[in-house]
Length: 332
Image (cartoon, rainbow, N blue to C red; front, side, top):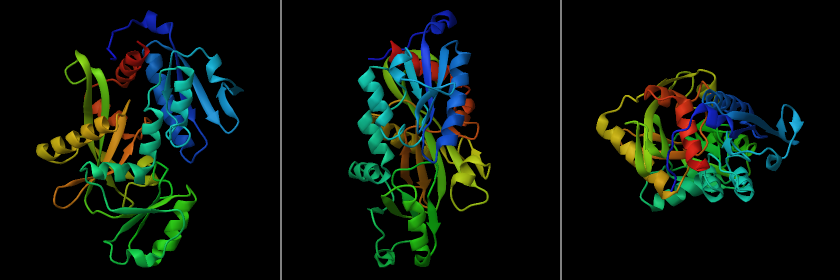
């Protein structure tokens, strides 16, 4: 059982936190921005922090190739979005090395990174998810003639909306499918749901952040719900997420009953999948006020343009306190 303990700045200086960022997917730049935010947060808490950048040559500190096992790391904060950070490879490596880390275990990381497989599993447990099919080669568009449009065509294993298209007619299908294939071999075709898009941040800790008190055991806690309103696009695509083309409203403009329902579903999914660290659940609320889970993001962004830091600020918490608390629970 992880138990939260308060540590002094002097004690923290003796611990070495490695912040992993970069990677070699389309999400590299976003990961570097998230990593820098985490670096600043851990430094604020008094830790000795190494910024470890991953590229196709390997792991680097200050531009020099290094071995993770040689760095003497007490704990690793994994800020690598996409492969290999979010798909289970990094967590598997760290587990073999015996280094505590911030993210889900290997199986959970791999599952949540595979949107179709994750949602298919959650559907069996009664969680509302959109209708979808996955393909490794382009299917006949005739299959989808009776589906409700718009459709979303997206790579199964990618994030930050890279390779995602929203199509209004079947004539747009082939081009959208090929765009998705550039990001991965498996492509999802998902029935569109019209409504309000929201994201709910979730974490698990033996510290009750809402009441600033230590708990006797771990508790899964919702952070906040953010409403996402794209201003120049029809959905929350890359431009909306990272180039200021959306309005993000925290808390979401929904009633308390619906907020509670979304938080309960988010916490249930977190516990059901046995997740770890800070996670974001993305939903669409349809016109009947029913939330549908779109995806589980096991390494959500931490940059200035990201939702989780906005939610933490809304709650009156400090990101440095949240990250250091979660780190200490794994270190001890």
